[in-house]
Length: 70
Length: 257
Image (cartoon, rainbow over all chains, first blue to last red; front, side):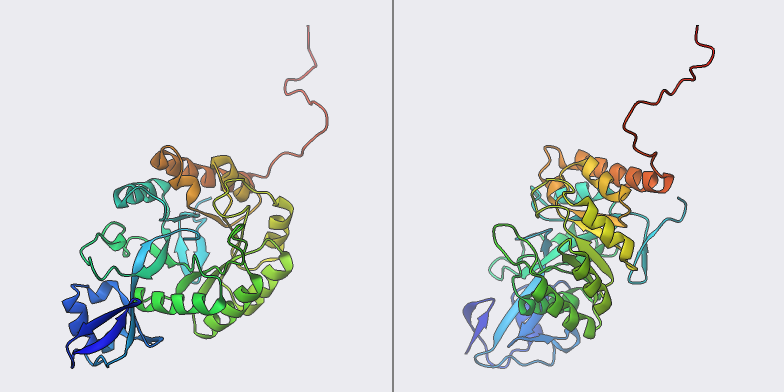
């Protein structure tokens, strides 16, 4: 197991998982989200190739209703 | 008025109303209000996914991104860096370059921080974003943003969410006169007449959220805003009569008994 920070919270996941695997485990549609890994945008086309490392900080975001402010 | 399309960043829209998708009761109401508004561009926010409950409904399930142009915003960002980071993520999530930049400077007034806004605009334009920018109603700042390459200038009509209407018609007018890119009033509209005023001034469009979402009947207000923007645009082209200080009878006085 490795430790990662996912959307600000610590999580334990299996070693050797790709970003694509993680999204599947989280039941998230890769088409509807974007991922930032250690402050770098991860291109959608590389989700299968990116292996998540111990200590990675991931942000997974999507679009929500929003106009102005919060 | 035929073919009077709103053009921005090489895209063309028949509607000149852009609506936000926040503050609604639920996604059903959001979808119905957007439909009634006739808007073809909707602003959306970028936020963390709830990884504990991924089955929560998502906006994209109610407003089809193929039918509506999603305009990701940076609402809630108070620094250029946060805004840039948010829009980079938005581009990856959506796959398009058209974004709305908004960097706020103060919690109480939500007035834009123009120093941070200029900095963020510069970085984003270098990265090939098409930047529609929320800004102060200062013609000098508006010109700077246009010179940087922003594709639309969007001064506030009044503070965000205030519903006070167009407080600064002189400033908005100056910005419109000098601009070679679309100018939209973004923020401050409270009711239909405010939207019409903005359009009569010669704005290319109006962006609003709260005026619709916080109306007693948001769907009915969305319809009203749709009509107001069209009416204001038509009046702008029609050219209003001159204002006079005294009465001027409409019926001829000759032949009076």
